[in-house]
Image 1: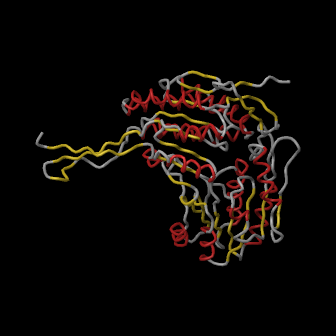
Image 2 (image 1 turned 30 degrees about the vertical axis):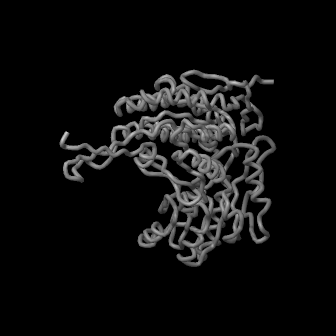
Image 3 (image 1 turned 90 degrees about the horizontal axis):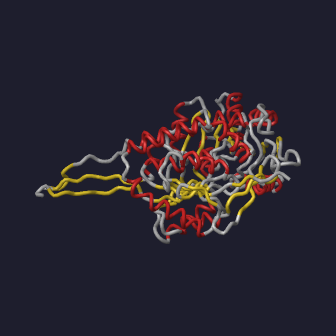
Length: 478
């Protein structure tokens, strides 16, 4: 038997096992076999990490924005320098294609860190002024304190960046928990950051849901940030309410893709297939729910089914694959369950089955003939499954697009500019793409409404979420 690699927590500038020695296996989704062990951290580990972050906070808070900028720029450079190593670990972590991980994740991560390095020096607020006779008012923007952060398994290292970069740039200290299925790349990031940041500023605690629960319930953090399921977000919000912690939630989506009759079908199909199947559809913004005008429904569905059938899933080192396996056995069971429970009126145009007997691979799937209240329309599948519905007019398209509990992202496909503007206003989602789907940039906010959560990632808005506002008034009489 191959000896399993040992991953460790990173607390107060050093790597540590769990205090009670407990571990959990980390499984390679390509093979379904364990390749490493990680700490199954308990209350003692969370206490130690929170104490380290709290002790480091005063000094880090008092650094100048330029000092924090320099540190983040060094981190970005270090990630670039160790890109190949990070990609190899992330691919083993998730089963993602090596080439796509290198081209589609490392550059955005580095860019996002550099963006927040600049944001550290662009603190915005109202100018000082006399709003009462004899008094001058100023506004201070300050870090909130220690931040408890929980990252998901779909983009482990990129979501770690989305968590720590704005928090650290704003002067906060961090305790970050990666998913229990994908801790490896976050532990490697801890090694990289540990050579640059003062000890205690960035801490990593590995573990399961109970570990995350202990972090959110802990009295030290001033803020809890989680990217995860609606269930997890509701639990975090409820727990944080007990001591009035600030909460930042990104909880998934069910993105509508509204395709009107005047669109370029071939181009739309090509782009939507990539946006739906990339990363095995394990993306909160994935193009999973296509609404097509009835006049082109048959042609569009046939073209999308062919594009899906031509899409390849496979091993990480295969340069021809678009995506690898689903992340874990539970996720494979969830995706399979949605297809197994399809109503009689639904039609699987292509796919709808597991690929191979080893690992957690699932075929690119297109399902048509669906109704608005069907489970697969209303609930997040988080897999390589695209549904297709036929609508009659703009009013019905808007009603069906908005008719789910999620409200993270959406897209509209049309050559009619006025229609695109109307739809972008009426769609109740945090992002509306027009004639494209899924691109993100560091300068623009990412975050949703309704059960997709609240708070923004990326952008100046994401940076401001990790700050607090203080009013200072001074008497001019001395």
